[in-house]
Image (cartoon, rainbow, N blue to C red; front, side, top):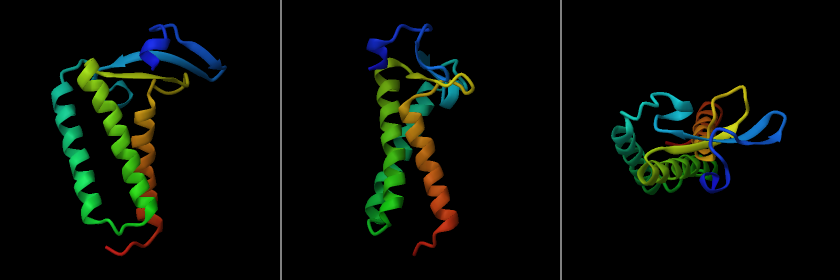
Length: 128
C-alpha cells in the first residue's frame, strides 16, 4: 500500500516524530548491504527459515500459545518481506522515526517475534 499512496523521498508527516517515507531497500534489515548483491541469498535464507518455522511448528504443536505467536510473527514478517523482494526486487520500507533507519511492518514483526521468543526462553521454563 505504501508504494501506491506515498511519493518516494518526500513522505508524509504523521506526527513530529513519525513520517511515512517510502524507501526501496534491496538489502537486509535497516538498509544493511543495500547494494542488492544479496537479493538471491536473502530470498533463499528467507525460504529456508520459513520452512524451518513451519516444520518446527508441526513437530512441536504442543508449544505454549505465546511461543507459537512469536513464531507466527516471525513467519508473517518473513512472508511480507519475501513477497516484496520477489515481486519488487526489494522491500519497501516506510516507517521513518527520524532517529532510526526507515523500516516496515514486516521488519517490526520479525524483530518483535524474535525478542518475544528470547524473552520467553530467558524467563519461562518450557518442557522441551
